Structures are given as structure tokens and as C-alpha cells.
Image 1 (tube, rainbow, N blue to C red):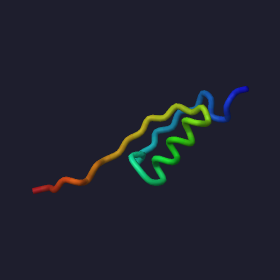
Image 2: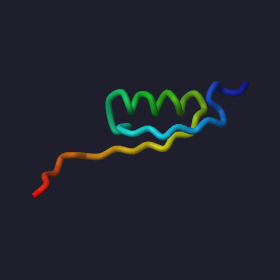
Image 3: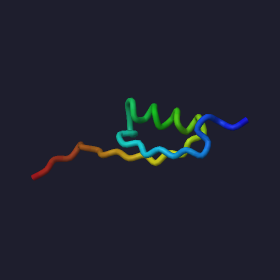
Length: 46
């Protein structure tokens, strides 16, 4: 039986944690392909 999101692709920003991570995981579980991105802002700018 095909999954709901077979053949679908999502680009998800902020997928390192929180809501973005959960969305990426659920998308993948339901058959979708995901491209995830995140930006770790734990550094400082001069």
C-alpha cells in the first residue's frame, strides 16, 4: 500500500530540533523525501 506522501519532496528549514525536526520525521515516516537545513547560531560575530 502506498504511503500518503510517496513521490513528494519537502525542504524543511530549522529541522535540527523542535517543530521542524518533528515535521521532517513525520514527513519521512509517511513516505516523503526530505531535505533538511538548520543554522547553529552558537557563535558570535565580530
